Image (cartoon, rainbow over all chains, first blue to last red; front, side, top):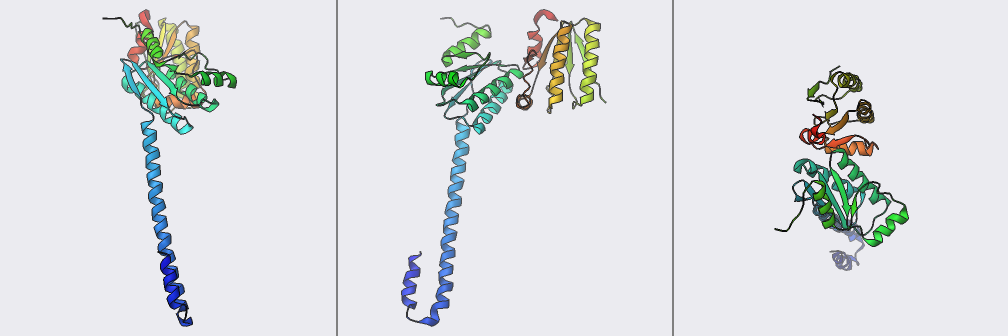
Length: 181
Length: 117
């Protein structure tokens, strides 16, 4: 579009009286260019925010494992906004499913720093206030190392190696036993 | 000021809070409850806060005071039906209500107190 300016300039280059018209013409072209660019950016921004939103939605599922036991498998980096969403979704699920046990699986969380640990602990305490017990599972060796190095205390929150161990713990706490048929 | 009714089921006292809690009514509830526990010889107290949507640090602290007070009379306190928003608020306020038991609803609260009613 801007190359039109060059073409027109070559035509009007000879005559001095056409310069004011050329300046006005150039301004219109500039405005058009600017408008195109703004529209493009706005559309892009919209796409990005839509995707971020749907990713946030997708990344925080709460699944019912058993009667009275729910699981929250976390995948990806936990930031404050996500941790908040996870907490809200989990607490809502506790109410709607009347679950007494929640297993938070952090196998898919690549890093755990003090902030993430803080969020996890807050979630556990909030669940306890509502009368449910939380179990944290899937802490990877490197993460365990980081947690200890950072001096983070999980206190009396039960932690298990795998989601399966967590489920077994929750089952035994609800007085259930798995036997082969 | 509104009074919070205290119901007696067996040897359990059921306090269902259905009003917007004011500082005064919580204080009054604390006094009433202490008297009722002594008068009835109850061994368990269930505080149902299903209808409570707003809590502040004062009310949070009062709830935990009620818990410690009941323990002095050898009565166990179970807080039931806390809403997610309320739980998040209490956690953000740094109140974890240690030493007070919790349950998802009144039925589970009664079961938690077991054969005590």
